[in-house]
Image (cartoon, rainbow, N blue to C red; front, top):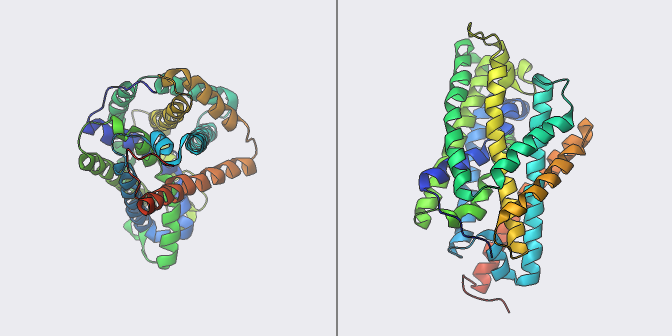
Length: 365
């Protein structure tokens, strides 16, 4: 069995989920939404936030039927040793693929905007080293670093807010130009950009407080992420017109590049390193979750020994795609896996647990 780490506070849980949710998507989501939702992109983000809240409550409902257990132990209890370990292996693979996809996307952005001459394998290696140093630590140490890194949201928000000096409100009109079908289609892309909250399936038993207090903090973290994405999308909509947004893959970075602060010429050079720290936190969350899964699968006491192997797998998967087509394929695989492992599989487990009336403490026959 795994070594039981010290529990974290509800405040740390709130910040942990925020760090896990905000990733690469925040840079490109205005570009993606401009094609489908147009002026209603902000509404798509709000709809996505509501969908995410529903998913969070569904996952919490599943965890609430097995108090004090993480997802891996629920699998063993729910499906038995053999099938349970198979499900654990599937979720480990899911976390590894998502971590690799985020790492690759981050490297692609850095190579486009700042480090054009740096080889891909070096940037992936740097991200891997930073992630490993975090993911192999105890959970409470990880949460303390996330709390410290959360202060970096202040300069991020201030930098993006400065773009409002160039804002033109008429660029956002008409809000319902794409109609409700376009807004709902944009909500799909926004929802995928908000994944990361599923880490609650692994860390919820390691948090102090009652079950309702925990889910409330997670929901509030999702509200913060939704409002942050809404702020970013709306700002880009007011700075760039629809034609410009269609040809700028990362409008947030382009916005930083156009700003003049007099003290420093290129705000994007300051913005990208700060944003990279948030990405490292997001990748480390998936690496930690996968390492804990391996610990449970092999009945070991500490996830620390498995973290290097997880990082090697993440590095290897991220290194394979070299063409735009293969990179998009990895992104699509991660998207479909998210549908399955965040929505379909937990919903199926919830339904089966109600049908069989199986709760914590009951052993499958």
